Image (cartoon, rainbow, N blue to C red; front, side, top):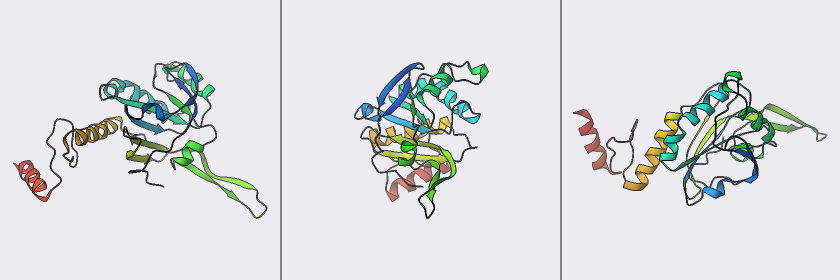
Length: 212
């Protein structure tokens, strides 16, 4: 898997559904540059099992992301019409109705490939015939992209393993704290806790205070 941390997030322009029902063309993360951080996450497929739990959990916490001026954007290899149908299906019937953040259509898998989260690849025989090995869907990749369009955090889960939305929020808090204060965030740091200077003295002071 590629490590995108420290690099510009791959750009794209694609179909999407926004506000739960609006079909749009040429959706791009570029609209957030200079304005917001972005949590951009991939999930395998619409109308599945773990995926709706994650997406609804993001929506349940959307106010917390908005308080931090962070955009949440989902993406899968489904069509925009599949997204629209799922977004307009009641949750009691397996849908995700009520979700308002944008969901991008990566129908050809290009965006997933560029972020290196596609759970498979094409192999060619001597005659040039292609066979897809693996699953033509995205792993559960999540990327925290700063206002300059640079990836600052990424995590990729295998298909059966759901993510922690609280951890995504924690990483947003850590990034914003560092950028505002210049102090680094130690293990298991949460908003409101003491951070430390990135020096040997800062580490020693932090550990000494922690032991009391």
